[in-house]
Length: 349
Image (cartoon, rainbow, N blue to C red; front, side, top):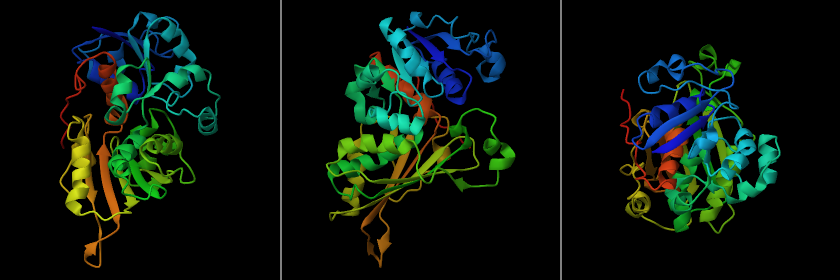
């Protein structure tokens, strides 16, 4: 059994980790930290876990994290890099759901997150945790930087086109929408029900911190310099993410061949569903699951296939966009079947 610790178990990604790991057949939940909720049974805060999780929250200094095999950080940026050196020295693997180990460029990290990186030597060995594009490296990793939710949709949507060299990589556009849970579990005016319900808005239009992460990763798949225009939006739903991606084709290709690019790229991927050409995936078709669904479109111009391709991508931002993907990485790191504990069917309606 894999002994698992979770630092920051009171937020949405923390409780999603608990939900997934509580039924994982190869996991023993060992420690869950929260300074504020020290001593409170987890099931008292989250009744959905009654009968599944018997642990109580413990203050970080009381938790025996070095007894774990792996520790997940579902915390604000900066926490994982402060604790990672001691955990690694004790032989514990680290999976960070925040941004501490995503960006290799420490200057970019400081610019976007407002703090200096405290352990660049560990950052250097950290592996970016997107299994579909980085599986071999994840298997041998000690430290995982779990991808952001938006970057997951953008990378898996653009990857087949970039790999084939079919698009102008300097002018990629991503128009993305996320449910309110993506902002985390916190009391903030802009996240109140009365502020978000019956409303729809863009945010961080001048620049979002997921942009440099996405560009850095997409650059690995293109000889052209990546140019990305990314605009996120907040929609009045709890969970779910929809990204509409646009790229200009630079070579002739028919629609069937375009579809085949995606089918071939993801035919062996258990958590990527390439839908029939021209489909319209819905966020609710992935709710509560680790599945990402995408569909390819080719808008016509004057009755002829145009020179732009549109990729629609949906996922649950808390599962494939965060905690489920982290467990997917853990499975790879410990030699388990990648799907172990993750074959949840989406919740409908």
